[in-house]
Length: 266
Image (cartoon, rainbow, N blue to C red; front, side, top):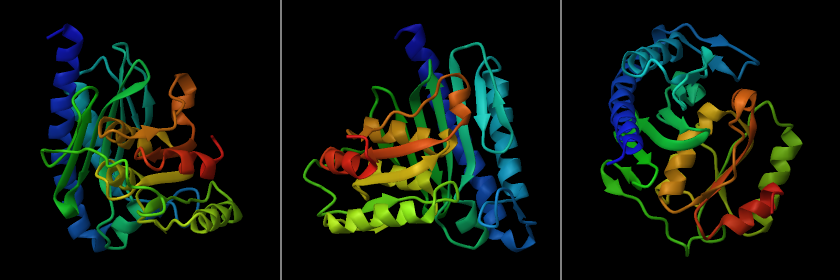
């Protein structure tokens, strides 16, 4: 095993351990969510609570203890540059709106980049008892079972995930949904883009498209999808681009062409 492979394996093991610990903390907050003080950020739909902040702080502390030289980007506390070539990209609770409203569609998302490429993706969905984990060259697994995408599944015979938020005009989202339906497809939206990307890796969704997402929402899911045999549209990760939003598209092999057309990137 090369030194780079050892470095990756150590970070992969840590990411899986952290997501379990962070997921347990988040689930405890979820089970007593009536006591949380809910705040808003950009608008009334963009919410945050002490749960998001404390879960991210836990993840940061665990990473800093083991890999102080690594960079770190979290949704709640921003970006810290590193010197190792590795950067952790974290959403402590993706799907905060479902979380605070008592719905189980939320997750803890941890990605690790090496030289700007997602090489580790771990997503924990505590309410469902599910752990999605992938590392470059090692495949993707759900609760230890290897994932492999079926190329016969298309937007016409399966379901596509669609995301929306206040960064995108309502008429744009309506047009996306309309064109997907006209093409013979159908869609779901569960409030967590990271979790829906994990569902693409698991073959539950044939693809996912959201016109604007942040790195912490998508990069773990991107690694999962790629290692399960799928495809993703590149996300800009170099320098300050890592902290900006961009379109997110990922799919199984049978839906790539249709989703590229739907997103206008073909």
